[in-house]
Structure formats: C-alpha cells, structure tokens
Figure (cartoon, one colour):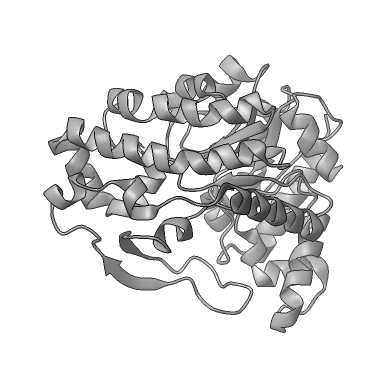
Length: 354
C-alpha cells in the first residue's frame, strides 16, 4: 500500500489497511539489520538498508523538512543548547553535543534583533530549485512512500533556535509588546520560504513548530493566540492558495491548540502521546488527518501485552477515520529492544486491517 495509503489518508479516503509512519527507527541499526538482512556494521550499506527497511515496514509517508536551523546559522547569530545522545548517524557519528552558546548577552540586545537584517534574503529562484531538488531526491530515495518538503523553524521553533529557552522565556514575559515586534520581524523573514514552496512543484508541506512541553504550553495560550497563530495562518495562506497539502507537527501536549492549528489551515497533524488524540479524532476526525500516538516508553519498558494494548488503544481511536496514520510518534530510539520493536510491527500488521 505504502504511498497510496499515505495519499489516501491525506485526502481523507479510506483504505483497507491503516497506513503508518515512524520516527528515528531508521537509525536503529540492529533492528534494521534484523528486518532487512543487510549488514549495517558496514557504513556503506546503511543508506541501502534504510531504504529497504522503510519499504518493508510499509511507510505510508516519510516525515521530512528542508528548511532547518542551518538557514539561520549560515547567516547570523543563533543559540546552542547542547544535544543529548539520541542516535548514531549513517556515517557512524553521534549527535551528542555539549556546546552551549547564548547568542544574545542580555535582554536589551535580544529585543533589538531585526531578523530580516540579521539573516537576510534568499534568492527565490534558487530557493525553489533547492526545494524541488530536495523533494526529488526524497522521492528517488523512498519511491514507495509519500514524500514532502517543509520547514522546521516555522515560528516558535525558530525563536527557540535563535534565543535559546532562557532568553526566549525572559523576553516574552518581561517585554511582550517589544518582543512581539521581533516575532513580527521573524515572520517577515521566514515567509520567504513559504512563498517559495507555494511556487514550487512540491505538493505536500510539513510545518513543524514545537509549541509546547510535555505538560503543555510554555506560555499562556492567549500569548500564542496574539503573537504566533495570526502569523502562522498568514504563512499557510499562500500554500493553501497554491493547493498544497499541509501537515503540522508539534512536540508536547498541544491539545489546547487543536482548534487554532485547524483554523490556521492544516490538513493533517502529528501528535505525541501526551496530546489527546481521542479528543482531536472526535472533533476533527471526519475532516482532518491525524498521526500517532503510541508511546515509545511502552516499547522501551513494556511487556508484549503492554505493547499490544498500546497499539490497540491507538487503533480503537483512529481506525474508524479515513485520515488516521499509525505511528510511535515520540520516536523509536536505538535503545529500544529489537524484539519489542519487531513485536510492535507484528501487532500493527495484525490490527491495521479495517
């Protein structure tokens, strides 16, 4: 089913089998070797092994963005907050980092940032060509799944990259109006990428913006409704006018913002297990796609019975809706026991038939 299933879900069409996608598991080399039979200790084999794994696990769509923090970093100041040891990349290197950089020494310096002046204009024709090349490369690498372009640093996530958490929270609390001008400036800078995607041949756009922590929003919901969502809606407008399909992703518990994101224009949403997928399904399941939301901790620490019940929970919520896509949406990291991941896939295959 693969690509056809992903497209069907995005277009709110029922299929005989619930589509699926996964995160981070394509860096779980022992599991990939077990599933594909390809020796992943040989680094040159890894790209081929990933392609074969995605095909064997029948991904309906592959989460991907092109516009990332590098588009900020190559032009101006950004903060660095370090990075936990999450995975081993295809080249065998770890993503662990202890580097911490505060790009702005004090609040006043942060409030004086002009994002357009700091990070500059990108040539639109070049951007469009790069976005289309990126999409074509994804389609070549994973021809059997639905591919996409997208932006990781949409609004709130972009502010996190620029300021780091400490300065961001200080600025939005201490000087909300002045910081609102900085956010407006960031919107005017980031919209060049959305306008380029609107003119590109890329049909599906992923909008990533981590609005929340596990327990909920990092600021009062009304702050987001004043300073984030009006701009997010404006960013989606050229995509909607160009008839692009829009998928939205946020980490954390963003249940309180379901209505806001739908109003902005998203066609499908990704959510972690801390978000209330049942509530979204009940209100929007007949009109919008949704992806998730099995909990990775069940695969890490649970029994087979626990894993079965977790998949069943998700299927019981989503299976009756055409736009549901199954996923362990807070990642299947490389420390997940191989036998648990294999059993999860077995249960998915068993329960995915409508």
